[in-house]
Amino acid sequence: SSDLFYISFKKYLNMLKTISALAMVASVAAHNVKVLDSDSFDATVKTDPVSLVKFYAPWCGHCKKIAPEFETASETLSPEVTLAEVDCTADESKDVCSKYGVRGYPTLKIFRAGSDEPSDYEGPRESDGIIKYMKKQTQPAWAVVDAAGLKAMAEGDTTVVLHVAGEEGDAFETFKKIADAQRNDFNFAVVTDAAVSAAEGATVPSVVMHRSFDEPKVTHTGELTKDALESFISDESMPLYGEIGPETYQKYMAKGLPLAWTFVDFPVSEETNTMMTEIAATFKGKLSFVKLDGERWAQHGKSMGVTSTPGFVIQKERKNFLFSGEWNKDDILAHAQGFVDGTITPHLKSEEIPATQDEPVFVLVGKQFEEIVFDN
Image (tube, rainbow, N blue to C red; front, side, top):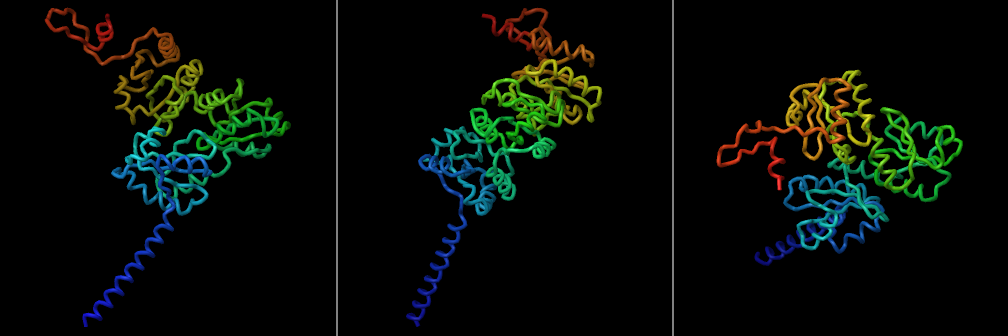
């Protein structure tokens, strides 16, 4: 009986080994996410057409949550799109994580073969959203269009159009690189038909932006260099007086201009919209004028000194230049001009300056801080 038991137990162990081996094969077959480190990183992202790389830490809760979604997406996207992961806590991966400025987890970046700089992944964190977002990355970032195609694109989202004689030359190559980098933000089109350009009133070469706010069509009049075109797109892709919120805040910050906040009642009156748009046009390139619901964001307004609507404050480097005049065009213009000229002072939450300083300890208040502290 002991012999029979031994034989049966041995068969049972062999069966478990077989099942385990099959499970391992299935797991490997399903696992399409590449594991990279500093040594293997470039070999993948510089040769694979499109790669989505997840920089993570094993202890990170958000990383654990996205891991199965990332894996599921890889099964659909591979081999068209490479999904890869880098453990930034591992010694062999710290160099590549440092190179790409990874400071939080998970950080997702899109790499393209032939491009020196990755772009940030700004899409959903669940598998269907990842698949849809990354499939778009495999499509051309720009399209050569005829008159009908241009009209269709221009009626949709903000569209940047290059009018050029042919698909060659420095301007065309520069435009392609910008389109690749900003494909998720705007539509990009190329017109090579001189008749279409003439009908649009566009010179060749030139870049024109079609948009749904302010002037519906604006033309870049400077050189067609990378810096000039990126600046043009950044400046003209936002309204002169637009609503700011979680979706647009980073875009306004990227412009690098002080923010001129207006806290107003929503829906905003036509009178206020018209007045503020005209004022914003006066300070184009110097200030970004934005509006937000004064009731909904009342606490944010109070943090800058605004206690009621309508309110206006210009913010620069955490200093708030609070408007205290009448809500009219002349007074607001004067306040903005004073800020630009440097003739107004920031608003401070401060006690009044003491009339006398008789005590052994000097009483320092906000209104006198810079005068005293920075007095050599």
